[in-house]
Length: 117
Image (tube, rainbow, N blue to C red; front, side, top):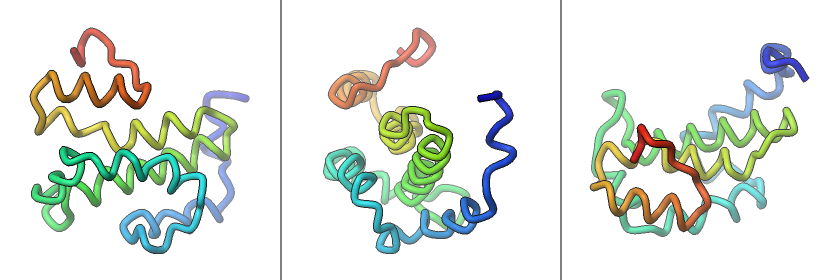
């Protein structure tokens, strides 16, 4: 598959994204099973205390990113489970100390490169 395959995603994919900011609308059981343990982490729950993009919380933002990357990667046959986890974790290091960030990523199988560590 070409690296630009995502440009040909069906229109139905784009209709799924409003669900990202309304997690109660997401009914994909596999996705819920992947992200539920992460969302139970105290550090992740605290992301709801920070405002992102002026009108949503950081928790809403990372959930939206997680849902969109999961959906894209699943459609393209890529590692959608890692994408869902990485979407949740991608902004955590802005608000966490290094050690909790590394521990959480290791716990959920997300590799960090030397720039992130």
